[in-house]
Length: 111
Length: 111
DNA sequence: ACAATCTATCGTAAAAATACGATAAAGGAG
DNA sequence: CTCCTTTATCGTATTTTTACGATAGATTGT
Image (cartoon, rainbow over all chains, first blue to last red):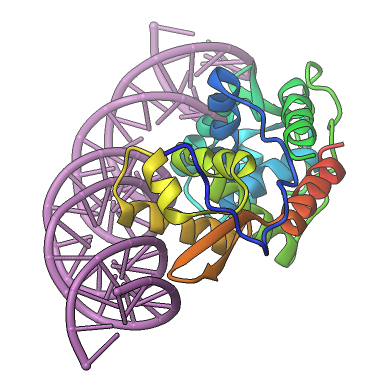
C-alpha cells in the first residue's frame, strides 16, 4: 500500500525527520539513554558539577553505587558523557561534541 | 557532599541543562517514547505521510496491529502525535506544537 | 438491523531494564 | 608488598517493556 488516507483536519508535516541508517540508530540510542529520570538527573548534575567523580554522583543520588555505575555506562555508550581515569577515581564530564551533534540533529529534522 | 573533585582534563560544562519539575518530566517522557526504533520509524512515516490512518502504519511495519496500536498510544501520551477519529478509522499526525516545544527545550538547555 | 471494516483494549508470554549486594580490578599511600 | 580507596562487573530478583492473538467497541454501508 503506497496510498495514504488524507484527513482534512491534519496539517501538512511540521518537520522533515529526514534521517536514516547509522545516524538514526545513534539518535535513537541517545533518546533511549535520556529517557530515564535517574539518567537525566545525572546529566543535569554533571552540567553544574563538571569534572566530578563517580562518588559525588553516588552521594547525590538515592540509589546504590552499582546502579549508578550501570547508568553511567549507559550514558557513556550513548555518547552523552565521557569518563577519564584520574588516579583511583574516575572523572566524568558531558561530551560536548556529541551533545552538539544531538542538538543539531534535532534542529535539522524537527524544523 | 557539596564539593566536586575538579579534573584538569574536563572542560567547563557545554550546556546549562537548566530544567526541572513538570517540564523535566515531560521532556524525559518524550525522550523515552522516541528511544525505541519502531516508534521512531512511526514518527518518520508520519512526517512523509501526514494524515494517514492506523492501517497504513500497520501495513508499513512488520509487526502486529495490536503492537502498533500500543506504540501509537505511547507516542500519543508523550505528545509526539495526535489522533483524530475519521469515520471508522483514525487519522494520525505529528503534534506540531509539542514537537516545537521539544525542539526549543533542547536548543535552550543544550546550548 | 446486520454485516463489514477499522482500531483499541485485554490477557499473557517473552525479553529487556532496573536495582541491589557481593566481589573483583586498578591505582595510590604507607 | 600491603592496605585503603574508588569504581566496574557479576549474579540475581523484580519490574517494566514489547509482542502477540483474541476480543470488544465504534462507524459505515447495505
